[in-house]
Length: 253
Image 1 (cartoon, rainbow, N blue to C red):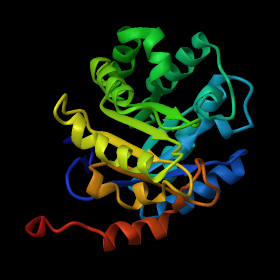
Image 2 (tube, helix red, strand yellow; image 1 turned 45 degrees about the vertical axis):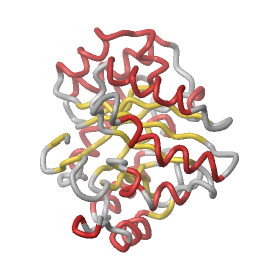
Image 3 (tube, rainbow, N blue to C red; image 1 turned 90 degrees about the vertical axis):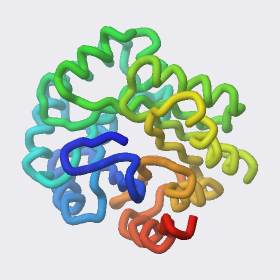
C-alpha cells in the first residue's frame, strides 16, 4: 500500500484519475473547477497539451493556480512525449529540466516519469525528484500492440529497480486475449515485487480493463472530464458508478 495525504493506494477500490487537457489557461482553470467537484481523487494535468507557454517556468507557474483550484485532490503532473503518445517531443535534457523544475515547485503530489527516459537519466534523476517529496508514477505506453508477458514483467521489474512509487503500463490490444493478459499481469507481478501497479488496455476493446480495474488489482484508473486523453477512456462520473457497482465484497471473494 501507498499513502499520499488522505489517499491510500492499494487499499479498497481503485482510485480515480481525471486528466486536464486544456490548451489555454482559461479553459485549464474551468476544467480544474469541474475536476474539483468530480468523483476523482487524483487530477492529472497533461501539460504537453497546453499551448500558452514559451518557457518551462511558465508551465510551472500554472501549478500554483491549479493547486489553489484543487485543494482536496492529489495533483499529478504529466508531460507525455510524442514517443509515448503525447503532443510534444522534448530532448532528454529538457525533459529532465522540466521534471526537476516541477518537483522543486512542490506544487504537485505526483509526477509521471516515462520509463524510457528514466533508463537514460538514471537513479540520480529519480532520487532528485523524490528529494522534493514528490511521488513517482513510472510509465510505459504501447500503441502498436500489447507486448508479450515477459516484456511487461521485465518493464515492471525495471520500474521497481528505479524505485517508482507506482508503475503504470497502458497498451493497445489487438485481440480480447491481449486484454485478458493485461488483466492478469498484476497478479503475476506480485510474485516478483510489491510495486503498486496500474495496468490498462486502451481503445474500445480495452474498456473492460478500466471498469474491471479492482478485480485486476490496479491501484488507479482513468476517467475523462470532457476530452479523452487516451483511447478508450470513459467519462469520470460513469467510471465512478461502474467502480461502485462492480465493487468486490471481501467476504464474497
